[in-house]
Length: 184
Image (tube, rainbow, N blue to C red; front, side, top):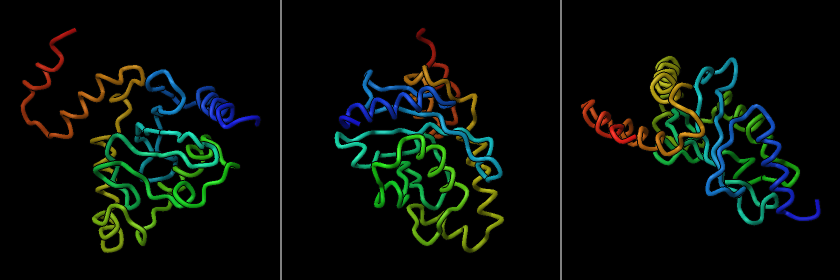
């Protein structure tokens, strides 16, 4: 590669040409959202997450910043911020890796093999170690509640963020939602 910007361009284009839905933010290649499906044969199978990616100026020499936008119950994902605790992204990143590695290998491995000994979500880690059945039930509940495919259309980003704010607030009144959608 002749420059980091060409590498960034190539990596983002590879993602866009793959099976992933990619939504660029501010028409640039430094920040975007990707729809990520839970891996097959995992507790997260059937769930869909919007993952926010920010590429630093020094990418690929510096790792991307990755975070789940909709909630996920996992020991290595902070429930409030969505940030991910993954050594290969946070500490052992190499320019040999690309963005496809993140979505085809690293994140699926994280969801298939959670590490309760290095948690960002202490409650999930504790429950996983104490009562595996209850932990698995809670993962499924979060998938059903926050990770439904029909909640996402990658082009409707502004509408989705409004809906997420309403669902995160757990508003029990449907009047708020109706009022929020009254303007075309």
